[in-house]
Length: 171
Image 1: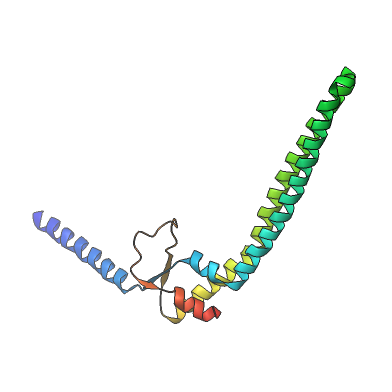
Image 2 (image 1 turned 180 degrees about the horizontal axis):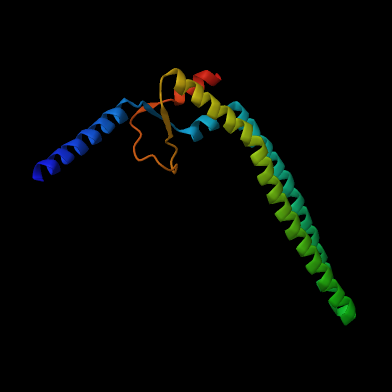
């Protein structure tokens, strides 16, 4: 019985070490995809377009806010000369205008988020395809994302594909 136990332990050890040897044969590389994407000219152009759109929305929201402030000041100055019904109607008008500004701001944020997704999706896909192409050409079986905060990478001392992929993309 003891002999069988030793044979099973030895067998398990052999299986475990053969799996370890196979894992060492796997070629693993890493790349900071965020750095790669940020180095792509199309990314810089997309960010410029998003910033321009955001400035446009900000200007419109500021203009609406300034107009509301001016209206509120005017209503406050005229409040003593108006009837209570008129002042209540003006309060309602101010609240409705504030609500419209809030809705416009929310719609602008949603629009910016959607535009960002639309602009960045093809850039991220181009980067992914280039990483796969270079990794396969160099014989790597796995490529880990070593971007700070990326899940799954504890240490990245292996081969860094960033310069190779940049060269493939011409950047």
